[in-house]
Picture 1 (cartoon, rainbow, N blue to C red):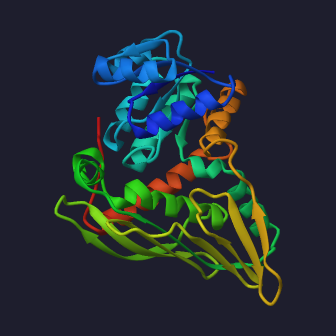
Picture 2: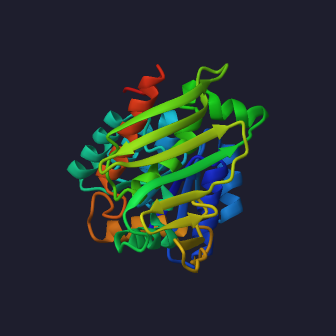
Length: 326
């Protein structure tokens, strides 16, 4: 599939680097930035034929089949809509949109136009996390009772400003808390929580820089998640069942898990990335396009909406709302 990349920042570079290392499975055809200088530098770095200084020109390129949207959170809805209106398939960086309502509108557009769209929630496609789901479904640790995950890092200077800017859809929940919520959605069998309680801190930017959330699920199951931009925290994930646990030293960069039966010998399972983990979502997008699907049956529309609806509810409980209505 011939890809266009919208924006030329760090995450766009990771996507481009991944495609280059996939050995010709996919093609990088075009990139777009807010300046021609940035677009041409990016294109030269990755051997991309077409460079544009506007997103509109990128979306109009007849040689582009699909666009990877890597712009700031607040632009995702309008950028995805632009691509769909131009007849392009879309893989949009997380969070898919800044509200569930915007996401519903994009899924509806894609289905109506016969185009594919998916959130680039890349960990959903990782082989090790799929293996974790299989182990849970098989009852290897009994019935799941409780799970927890943490994610935190520190940011300084311009990066900190960008992460917290409310005009860009900033805040720790949207930036990294979504990984915690998406991971728990996988752990709990794609079941929505029945309720939540939270502790949080709002910073001088008017966005959240810390939250600790307790999620309640049907069947007396619970999960706790912590997200912070300001504290370095290991990305550990643990799932506790009635007869054992599954531990992931790094649930986001998930290449290893340990099954720990209560009273038994731990079993380590390792599934290293082929490249860096992005390759799996790229292949999923191509597969779905080839099969004429409007979205993935691995990361379903209802899964993206479930997490966004939960984030909407959490932010509303904090008195926050980010939405880019257009």
